[in-house]
Amino acid sequence: MSSRTYKDAVDHLNSLQSNAAVLEALRASGGRSSEFAIPEMLEYLGRIGYSPSDLNRLNVIHITGTKGKGSTSAFTDSLIRHAMPEWKVGLYTSPHLVAVRERIRINGAPISEEDFARFFFEIWDRLEQNDTRANPDTSAKPGYFRFLTLLAWHAFLTLKVDATILEVGVGGMYDSTNIVPKPVVTGICALGLDHTAILGKTLAAIAWQKGGIYKEDVPALTVNQPEEAMEVLRQQAIDHKASEFIIVPPTPGLSDIKLGLSGAHQYQNANLAVHLAKTFLRLKTHWRPQNGLVAARQYPIPLTNTQPGSSTAHIPSRVLIVPCSVLIFNCTNGRSGKSFLAAMLAKAAAQLQLYGRSDDASQFFDHVVFCTNVTYADGGFKGDLTTLAIPEADLAQLKTQHDLASAWSSLVPSFPNDNIHVLPSIEHAINLVRELRSQHAEKQLDVLVAGSLHLVGGVIEVAGLSKVAL
Image (tube, rainbow, N blue to C red; front, side, top):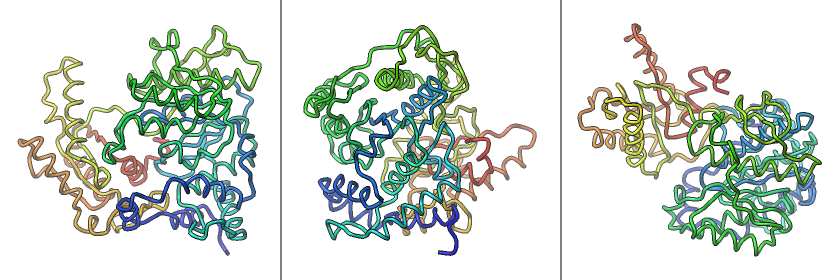
Protein backbone atom coordinates (compact mmCIF):
# COMPACT_ATOMS: atom_id res chain seq x y z
CA MET A 1 0.00 0.00 0.00
CA SER A 2 1.56 3.27 -1.17
CA SER A 3 -0.25 5.56 1.26
CA ARG A 4 -1.05 4.99 4.91
CA THR A 5 -2.37 8.31 6.10
CA TYR A 6 -5.06 9.06 8.66
CA LYS A 7 -7.53 9.47 5.78
CA ASP A 8 -6.54 6.05 4.45
CA ALA A 9 -7.12 4.56 7.90
CA VAL A 10 -10.57 6.16 8.17
CA ASP A 11 -11.50 4.95 4.67
CA HIS A 12 -10.48 1.40 5.60
CA LEU A 13 -12.36 1.67 8.89
CA ASN A 14 -15.53 2.78 7.09
CA SER A 15 -15.33 -0.33 4.93
CA LEU A 16 -16.07 -2.31 8.11
CA GLN A 17 -19.46 -0.66 8.60
CA SER A 18 -22.61 -2.66 7.93
CA ASN A 19 -24.94 -0.99 5.45
CA ALA A 20 -28.61 -0.28 6.08
CA ALA A 21 -29.85 -3.41 4.31
CA VAL A 22 -27.59 -5.70 6.36
CA LEU A 23 -28.58 -4.00 9.61
CA GLU A 24 -32.27 -4.40 8.79
CA ALA A 25 -31.77 -8.09 8.00
CA LEU A 26 -29.95 -8.56 11.32
CA ARG A 27 -32.77 -6.84 13.21
CA ALA A 28 -35.35 -8.99 11.47
CA SER A 29 -33.49 -12.17 12.36
CA GLY A 30 -32.81 -11.12 15.94
CA GLY A 31 -29.11 -10.56 15.22
CA ARG A 32 -26.18 -12.93 15.35
CA SER A 33 -26.48 -15.09 18.44
CA SER A 34 -24.88 -13.43 21.44
CA GLU A 35 -23.14 -16.69 22.30
CA PHE A 36 -20.64 -15.94 19.52
CA ALA A 37 -19.89 -12.34 20.55
CA ILE A 38 -17.23 -12.91 23.21
CA PRO A 39 -15.53 -15.93 21.57
CA GLU A 40 -15.21 -13.97 18.33
CA MET A 41 -13.74 -10.96 20.08
CA LEU A 42 -11.26 -13.17 21.91
CA GLU A 43 -10.26 -14.69 18.59
CA TYR A 44 -9.68 -11.28 17.02
CA LEU A 45 -7.58 -10.31 20.03
CA GLY A 46 -5.44 -13.43 19.60
CA ARG A 47 -5.02 -12.80 15.89
CA ILE A 48 -3.43 -9.40 16.57
CA GLY A 49 -0.98 -10.94 19.02
CA TYR A 50 -2.50 -10.44 22.46
CA SER A 51 -3.96 -12.67 25.12
CA PRO A 52 -6.79 -11.63 27.46
CA SER A 53 -4.34 -11.47 30.38
CA ASP A 54 -2.41 -8.76 28.51
CA LEU A 55 -5.45 -6.50 28.93
CA ASN A 56 -5.08 -6.68 32.71
CA ARG A 57 -1.95 -4.55 32.32
CA LEU A 58 -4.20 -1.68 31.29
CA ASN A 59 -5.61 -1.35 34.83
CA VAL A 60 -9.19 -0.97 33.65
CA ILE A 61 -12.12 0.87 35.20
CA HIS A 62 -15.08 -0.64 33.30
CA ILE A 63 -18.28 1.43 33.12
CA THR A 64 -21.73 0.70 31.69
CA GLY A 65 -25.33 1.81 32.14
CA THR A 66 -28.30 3.07 30.16
CA LYS A 67 -27.78 6.74 30.99
CA GLY A 68 -24.64 8.58 31.98
CA LYS A 69 -21.84 6.15 31.19
CA GLY A 70 -20.08 8.68 28.97
CA SER A 71 -20.31 11.41 31.58
CA THR A 72 -19.21 9.06 34.36
CA SER A 73 -16.24 7.97 32.25
CA ALA A 74 -15.25 11.60 31.65
CA PHE A 75 -15.51 12.46 35.34
CA THR A 76 -13.52 9.36 36.33
CA ASP A 77 -10.81 10.17 33.80
CA SER A 78 -10.54 13.71 35.16
CA LEU A 79 -10.35 12.55 38.76
CA ILE A 80 -7.69 9.90 38.14
CA ARG A 81 -5.57 12.29 36.10
CA HIS A 82 -5.66 14.96 38.76
CA ALA A 83 -4.99 12.56 41.61
CA MET A 84 -2.02 11.05 39.76
CA PRO A 85 -0.64 13.80 37.47
CA GLU A 86 2.50 11.81 36.70
CA TRP A 87 0.45 8.96 35.21
CA LYS A 88 -0.52 8.30 31.63
CA VAL A 89 -4.31 7.73 31.60
CA GLY A 90 -6.25 6.23 28.68
CA LEU A 91 -9.94 6.90 27.99
CA TYR A 92 -12.02 4.93 25.48
CA THR A 93 -15.53 6.21 24.76
CA SER A 94 -18.06 6.39 21.93
CA PRO A 95 -19.39 7.77 19.70
CA HIS A 96 -17.26 10.60 18.30
CA LEU A 97 -18.32 14.04 17.12
CA VAL A 98 -15.96 15.13 14.36
CA ALA A 99 -12.94 12.80 14.28
CA VAL A 100 -12.96 9.11 15.11
CA ARG A 101 -9.68 9.46 17.02
CA GLU A 102 -11.65 11.39 19.69
CA ARG A 103 -12.74 7.99 21.01
CA ILE A 104 -9.18 7.11 22.08
CA ARG A 105 -7.64 9.67 24.42
CA ILE A 106 -4.42 9.90 26.39
CA ASN A 107 -4.42 12.33 29.31
CA GLY A 108 -7.55 13.97 27.96
CA ALA A 109 -6.36 14.53 24.38
CA PRO A 110 -7.30 12.44 21.33
CA ILE A 111 -4.40 10.45 19.95
CA SER A 112 -2.78 12.13 16.98
CA GLU A 113 -3.70 11.38 13.38
CA GLU A 114 -0.24 9.88 12.92
CA ASP A 115 -0.62 7.54 15.89
CA PHE A 116 -4.14 6.56 14.88
CA ALA A 117 -2.97 5.64 11.37
CA ARG A 118 0.07 3.77 12.69
CA PHE A 119 -1.88 1.71 15.21
CA PHE A 120 -4.72 1.15 12.74
CA PHE A 121 -2.54 -0.38 10.04
CA GLU A 122 -0.56 -2.44 12.53
CA ILE A 123 -3.81 -4.15 13.50
CA TRP A 124 -5.06 -4.33 9.91
CA ASP A 125 -1.85 -6.04 8.78
CA ARG A 126 -1.86 -8.53 11.66
CA LEU A 127 -5.43 -9.56 10.86
CA GLU A 128 -4.55 -10.06 7.19
CA GLN A 129 -1.39 -12.01 8.00
CA ASN A 130 -3.14 -14.26 10.52
CA ASP A 131 -6.45 -15.28 8.95
CA THR A 132 -6.88 -18.58 10.77
CA ARG A 133 -10.38 -18.71 12.25
CA ALA A 134 -11.91 -21.26 14.58
CA ASN A 135 -15.34 -20.59 13.10
CA PRO A 136 -15.38 -20.13 9.30
CA ASP A 137 -18.54 -18.01 9.64
CA THR A 138 -16.63 -15.39 11.62
CA SER A 139 -15.81 -12.36 9.47
CA ALA A 140 -12.18 -12.01 8.43
CA LYS A 141 -12.11 -8.60 10.07
CA PRO A 142 -14.18 -7.31 12.98
CA GLY A 143 -16.89 -4.72 12.54
CA TYR A 144 -16.40 -0.97 13.05
CA PHE A 145 -16.75 -0.78 16.85
CA ARG A 146 -14.88 -4.02 17.49
CA PHE A 147 -11.96 -2.84 15.37
CA LEU A 148 -11.82 0.45 17.25
CA THR A 149 -11.86 -1.43 20.56
CA LEU A 150 -8.89 -3.51 19.43
CA LEU A 151 -7.18 -0.35 18.24
CA ALA A 152 -7.70 1.33 21.62
CA TRP A 153 -6.22 -1.63 23.49
CA HIS A 154 -3.26 -1.82 21.11
CA ALA A 155 -2.64 1.93 21.48
CA PHE A 156 -2.91 1.86 25.29
CA LEU A 157 -0.64 -1.17 25.60
CA THR A 158 1.92 0.27 23.20
CA LEU A 159 1.92 3.64 24.96
CA LYS A 160 2.03 1.92 28.37
CA VAL A 161 -0.84 3.68 30.10
CA ASP A 162 -1.06 3.47 33.88
CA ALA A 163 -4.87 3.40 33.98
CA THR A 164 -7.69 2.93 31.47
CA ILE A 165 -11.27 4.14 31.70
CA LEU A 166 -13.25 1.83 29.43
CA GLU A 167 -16.80 2.72 28.46
CA VAL A 168 -19.02 -0.13 27.29
CA GLY A 169 -20.39 0.29 23.78
CA VAL A 170 -23.77 -1.44 24.01
CA GLY A 171 -25.15 -3.59 26.81
CA GLY A 172 -22.42 -5.19 28.86
CA MET A 173 -22.44 -8.99 28.99
CA TYR A 174 -21.72 -9.45 25.27
CA ASP A 175 -20.09 -6.11 24.52
CA SER A 176 -16.74 -6.25 22.77
CA THR A 177 -15.10 -4.40 25.68
CA ASN A 178 -16.07 -7.20 28.07
CA ILE A 179 -13.10 -9.50 27.59
CA VAL A 180 -10.80 -7.93 30.19
CA PRO A 181 -10.38 -10.81 32.68
CA LYS A 182 -9.80 -8.67 35.74
CA PRO A 183 -10.53 -4.96 35.66
CA VAL A 184 -9.62 -3.07 38.82
CA VAL A 185 -13.20 -1.91 39.47
CA THR A 186 -16.52 -1.96 37.60
CA GLY A 187 -19.41 0.49 37.77
CA ILE A 188 -22.99 0.73 36.52
CA CYS A 189 -24.80 4.03 35.96
CA ALA A 190 -28.56 4.58 35.94
CA LEU A 191 -30.57 1.88 34.17
CA GLY A 192 -33.69 2.51 32.12
CA LEU A 193 -35.67 1.47 29.07
CA ASP A 194 -34.69 4.35 26.79
CA HIS A 195 -32.81 2.45 24.10
CA THR A 196 -34.23 -1.03 24.53
CA ALA A 197 -37.95 -0.72 25.23
CA ILE A 198 -38.69 -1.08 21.52
CA LEU A 199 -36.97 -4.45 21.61
CA GLY A 200 -39.34 -5.68 24.29
CA LYS A 201 -36.69 -5.95 26.98
CA THR A 202 -37.61 -5.62 30.63
CA LEU A 203 -35.62 -3.63 33.15
CA ALA A 204 -34.55 -6.90 34.78
CA ALA A 205 -33.20 -8.16 31.45
CA ILE A 206 -31.30 -4.92 30.94
CA ALA A 207 -29.83 -5.17 34.43
CA TRP A 208 -28.74 -8.75 33.72
CA GLN A 209 -26.93 -7.56 30.58
CA LYS A 210 -25.23 -4.64 32.32
CA GLY A 211 -24.30 -6.75 35.34
CA GLY A 212 -22.35 -8.96 32.97
CA ILE A 213 -19.34 -6.66 33.39
CA TYR A 214 -18.97 -7.69 37.04
CA LYS A 215 -15.94 -9.94 37.55
CA GLU A 216 -14.56 -12.37 40.12
CA ASP A 217 -12.64 -10.69 42.98
CA VAL A 218 -13.38 -7.23 41.52
CA PRO A 219 -15.47 -4.57 43.34
CA ALA A 220 -18.91 -4.18 41.72
CA LEU A 221 -20.35 -0.68 42.10
CA THR A 222 -23.71 0.77 41.08
CA VAL A 223 -25.77 3.88 41.61
CA ASN A 224 -29.18 3.46 43.25
CA GLN A 225 -31.47 1.57 40.87
CA PRO A 226 -35.16 0.59 40.72
CA GLU A 227 -35.65 -2.43 42.97
CA GLU A 228 -36.33 -4.77 40.04
CA ALA A 229 -32.96 -3.88 38.54
CA MET A 230 -31.12 -3.76 41.86
CA GLU A 231 -32.03 -7.32 42.76
CA VAL A 232 -30.69 -8.55 39.44
CA LEU A 233 -27.43 -6.60 39.82
CA ARG A 234 -26.99 -7.92 43.34
CA GLN A 235 -27.44 -11.48 42.05
CA GLN A 236 -25.05 -10.84 39.17
CA ALA A 237 -22.41 -9.69 41.64
CA ILE A 238 -22.91 -12.93 43.58
CA ASP A 239 -22.89 -15.12 40.47
CA HIS A 240 -19.73 -13.47 39.14
CA LYS A 241 -18.10 -13.67 42.59
CA ALA A 242 -17.39 -9.95 42.83
CA SER A 243 -15.24 -9.04 45.84
CA GLU A 244 -17.95 -6.66 47.06
CA PHE A 245 -21.24 -5.18 45.85
CA ILE A 246 -21.58 -1.48 46.63
CA ILE A 247 -24.52 0.84 46.14
CA VAL A 248 -22.50 4.04 46.20
CA PRO A 249 -23.47 6.41 49.04
CA PRO A 250 -23.63 10.19 48.54
CA THR A 251 -20.34 12.08 48.60
CA PRO A 252 -20.54 14.79 51.30
CA GLY A 253 -20.52 18.27 49.79
CA LEU A 254 -20.75 17.12 46.19
CA SER A 255 -24.23 18.54 45.66
CA ASP A 256 -22.96 22.02 46.57
CA ILE A 257 -20.32 22.03 43.83
CA LYS A 258 -20.78 23.28 40.28
CA LEU A 259 -19.71 20.49 37.95
CA GLY A 260 -18.02 20.70 34.58
CA LEU A 261 -20.98 18.98 32.88
CA SER A 262 -24.42 20.56 33.03
CA GLY A 263 -27.58 19.00 34.44
CA ALA A 264 -28.81 17.84 37.84
CA HIS A 265 -28.45 14.21 36.74
CA GLN A 266 -24.70 14.71 36.46
CA TYR A 267 -24.36 14.68 40.25
CA GLN A 268 -25.29 11.01 40.29
CA ASN A 269 -22.72 10.34 37.55
CA ALA A 270 -20.07 12.40 39.35
CA ASN A 271 -20.80 10.59 42.61
CA LEU A 272 -20.27 7.20 40.97
CA ALA A 273 -17.06 8.53 39.39
CA VAL A 274 -15.78 9.63 42.81
CA HIS A 275 -16.32 6.15 44.24
CA LEU A 276 -14.82 4.45 41.19
CA ALA A 277 -11.73 6.66 41.43
CA LYS A 278 -11.42 6.18 45.18
CA THR A 279 -11.70 2.41 44.88
CA PHE A 280 -9.23 2.31 42.00
CA LEU A 281 -6.65 4.43 43.80
CA ARG A 282 -7.06 2.48 47.02
CA LEU A 283 -6.36 -0.79 45.19
CA LYS A 284 -3.57 0.38 42.90
CA THR A 285 -1.65 2.93 44.99
CA HIS A 286 -0.88 3.90 48.56
CA TRP A 287 -3.26 6.84 48.15
CA ARG A 288 -5.85 7.43 50.84
CA PRO A 289 -8.61 10.08 50.71
CA GLN A 290 -8.08 13.12 52.88
CA ASN A 291 -9.69 16.53 53.14
CA GLY A 292 -8.84 18.04 49.80
CA LEU A 293 -10.14 18.74 46.35
CA VAL A 294 -9.72 17.55 42.80
CA ALA A 295 -11.09 19.29 39.75
CA ALA A 296 -13.74 18.03 37.36
CA ARG A 297 -13.22 20.49 34.54
CA GLN A 298 -12.33 23.70 36.41
CA TYR A 299 -14.66 22.89 39.28
CA PRO A 300 -13.67 20.84 42.33
CA ILE A 301 -14.97 17.51 43.55
CA PRO A 302 -13.87 16.27 47.01
CA LEU A 303 -11.52 13.36 46.50
CA THR A 304 -7.81 13.72 47.19
CA ASN A 305 -5.30 15.64 49.23
CA THR A 306 -4.11 17.52 46.15
CA GLN A 307 -5.19 21.01 45.15
CA PRO A 308 -7.55 21.70 42.22
CA GLY A 309 -5.78 21.65 38.90
CA SER A 310 -6.52 21.87 35.20
CA SER A 311 -8.04 18.40 34.74
CA THR A 312 -11.28 18.53 32.79
CA ALA A 313 -14.42 16.46 32.69
CA HIS A 314 -15.69 17.42 29.27
CA ILE A 315 -17.81 15.74 26.62
CA PRO A 316 -17.99 18.01 23.56
CA SER A 317 -21.55 19.01 22.60
CA ARG A 318 -23.29 16.50 24.90
CA VAL A 319 -24.70 19.40 26.94
CA LEU A 320 -24.65 22.94 25.60
CA ILE A 321 -27.15 25.58 26.79
CA VAL A 322 -27.87 28.58 24.56
CA PRO A 323 -30.86 30.85 23.88
CA CYS A 324 -32.04 29.91 20.37
CA SER A 325 -34.09 31.10 17.44
CA VAL A 326 -33.24 28.31 14.97
CA LEU A 327 -33.54 24.57 15.64
CA ILE A 328 -31.63 22.05 13.51
CA PHE A 329 -32.87 18.55 14.28
CA ASN A 330 -32.62 14.97 13.10
CA CYS A 331 -33.02 11.57 14.72
CA THR A 332 -32.21 8.01 13.79
CA ASN A 333 -34.63 6.37 11.40
CA GLY A 334 -37.12 4.24 13.32
CA ARG A 335 -37.02 6.24 16.54
CA SER A 336 -40.01 8.26 17.63
CA GLY A 337 -39.20 11.73 16.41
CA LYS A 338 -42.55 13.13 17.48
CA SER A 339 -41.95 11.94 21.05
CA PHE A 340 -38.49 13.51 21.07
CA LEU A 341 -39.82 16.83 19.80
CA ALA A 342 -42.72 16.80 22.26
CA ALA A 343 -40.34 16.11 25.14
CA MET A 344 -38.08 18.95 24.02
CA LEU A 345 -40.97 21.42 23.90
CA ALA A 346 -42.20 20.26 27.31
CA LYS A 347 -38.72 20.72 28.78
CA ALA A 348 -38.43 24.18 27.25
CA ALA A 349 -41.79 25.14 28.78
CA ALA A 350 -40.71 23.85 32.19
CA GLN A 351 -37.43 25.78 32.05
CA LEU A 352 -39.15 28.99 31.01
CA GLN A 353 -41.55 28.62 33.92
CA LEU A 354 -38.66 27.86 36.27
CA TYR A 355 -37.05 31.16 35.36
CA GLY A 356 -40.31 33.07 35.72
CA ARG A 357 -40.77 33.76 32.03
CA SER A 358 -44.16 33.82 30.33
CA ASP A 359 -42.84 32.97 26.84
CA ASP A 360 -44.74 30.40 24.82
CA ALA A 361 -42.36 27.45 24.43
CA SER A 362 -43.96 26.59 21.08
CA GLN A 363 -42.75 29.96 19.77
CA PHE A 364 -39.26 29.59 21.17
CA PHE A 365 -37.84 29.06 17.66
CA ASP A 366 -38.27 31.32 14.65
CA HIS A 367 -37.24 28.56 12.23
CA VAL A 368 -36.92 24.78 12.47
CA VAL A 369 -34.73 22.75 10.12
CA PHE A 370 -34.98 18.99 9.63
CA CYS A 371 -32.02 17.65 7.65
CA THR A 372 -30.25 14.35 7.16
CA ASN A 373 -26.89 13.49 8.71
CA VAL A 374 -25.23 13.68 5.27
CA THR A 375 -22.35 16.11 5.69
CA TYR A 376 -22.11 17.91 2.36
CA ALA A 377 -24.50 19.29 -0.25
CA ASP A 378 -23.04 17.00 -2.92
CA GLY A 379 -24.26 13.98 -0.94
CA GLY A 380 -20.88 13.07 0.49
CA PHE A 381 -19.75 12.54 4.08
CA LYS A 382 -16.63 13.70 5.85
CA GLY A 383 -14.63 10.48 6.24
CA ASP A 384 -14.89 10.36 10.04
CA LEU A 385 -18.66 10.95 9.86
CA THR A 386 -19.49 8.43 7.15
CA THR A 387 -22.47 6.20 7.90
CA LEU A 388 -23.81 3.41 5.75
CA ALA A 389 -26.74 2.79 8.06
CA ILE A 390 -29.22 5.17 6.38
CA PRO A 391 -31.52 3.41 3.86
CA GLU A 392 -30.98 4.83 0.37
CA ALA A 393 -34.71 5.19 -0.23
CA ASP A 394 -35.07 7.16 2.99
CA LEU A 395 -32.29 9.52 1.92
CA ALA A 396 -33.65 9.96 -1.59
CA GLN A 397 -37.13 10.82 -0.38
CA LEU A 398 -36.13 12.51 2.91
CA LYS A 399 -38.84 10.40 4.52
CA THR A 400 -37.60 10.78 8.09
CA GLN A 401 -37.22 14.53 7.69
CA HIS A 402 -40.72 14.97 6.20
CA ASP A 403 -42.12 12.86 9.06
CA LEU A 404 -40.36 15.14 11.54
CA ALA A 405 -41.74 18.24 9.82
CA SER A 406 -45.26 16.80 9.99
CA ALA A 407 -44.75 15.94 13.65
CA TRP A 408 -43.65 19.51 14.40
CA SER A 409 -46.71 20.92 12.59
CA SER A 410 -49.01 18.69 14.63
CA LEU A 411 -47.30 19.68 17.87
CA VAL A 412 -47.22 23.39 17.03
CA PRO A 413 -50.16 24.02 14.65
CA SER A 414 -49.60 27.80 14.73
CA PHE A 415 -45.99 27.55 13.53
CA PRO A 416 -45.58 29.12 10.04
CA ASN A 417 -45.13 26.46 7.36
CA ASP A 418 -42.68 28.68 5.50
CA ASN A 419 -40.38 28.52 8.53
CA ILE A 420 -40.26 24.70 8.60
CA HIS A 421 -37.42 23.51 6.38
CA VAL A 422 -36.71 19.98 5.10
CA LEU A 423 -33.18 19.80 3.70
CA PRO A 424 -31.00 16.98 2.27
CA SER A 425 -27.71 17.72 4.04
CA ILE A 426 -26.05 19.48 6.93
CA GLU A 427 -24.32 21.85 4.53
CA HIS A 428 -27.74 22.90 3.21
CA ALA A 429 -28.79 23.62 6.81
CA ILE A 430 -25.68 25.70 7.55
CA ASN A 431 -26.17 27.65 4.32
CA LEU A 432 -29.75 28.42 5.38
CA VAL A 433 -28.55 29.65 8.78
CA ARG A 434 -26.00 31.91 7.09
CA GLU A 435 -28.71 33.27 4.81
CA LEU A 436 -30.97 33.96 7.78
CA ARG A 437 -28.10 35.66 9.58
CA SER A 438 -27.53 37.97 6.62
CA GLN A 439 -31.25 38.80 6.54
CA HIS A 440 -31.27 39.66 10.25
CA ALA A 441 -27.86 41.27 10.62
CA GLU A 442 -29.21 43.66 13.23
CA LYS A 443 -29.71 40.91 15.83
CA GLN A 444 -27.89 37.84 17.09
CA LEU A 445 -28.95 34.55 15.55
CA ASP A 446 -28.63 31.57 17.90
CA VAL A 447 -28.89 27.96 16.78
CA LEU A 448 -29.72 24.79 18.72
CA VAL A 449 -28.57 21.50 17.17
CA ALA A 450 -30.20 18.44 18.72
CA GLY A 451 -31.50 14.91 18.30
CA SER A 452 -28.49 13.15 16.79
CA LEU A 453 -24.87 13.27 17.90
CA HIS A 454 -23.86 12.57 14.28
CA LEU A 455 -25.79 15.69 13.29
CA VAL A 456 -23.99 17.74 15.96
CA GLY A 457 -20.63 16.51 14.72
CA GLY A 458 -21.53 17.33 11.13
CA VAL A 459 -22.60 20.86 12.04
CA ILE A 460 -19.34 21.41 13.92
CA GLU A 461 -17.43 20.23 10.85
CA VAL A 462 -19.32 22.20 8.20
CA ALA A 463 -19.52 25.38 10.28
CA GLY A 464 -15.78 25.25 10.95
CA LEU A 465 -16.16 25.03 14.71
CA SER A 466 -13.90 22.04 15.44
CA LYS A 467 -11.23 23.99 17.32
CA VAL A 468 -13.85 25.80 19.40
CA ALA A 469 -16.07 22.81 20.15
CA LEU A 470 -13.41 20.18 20.87
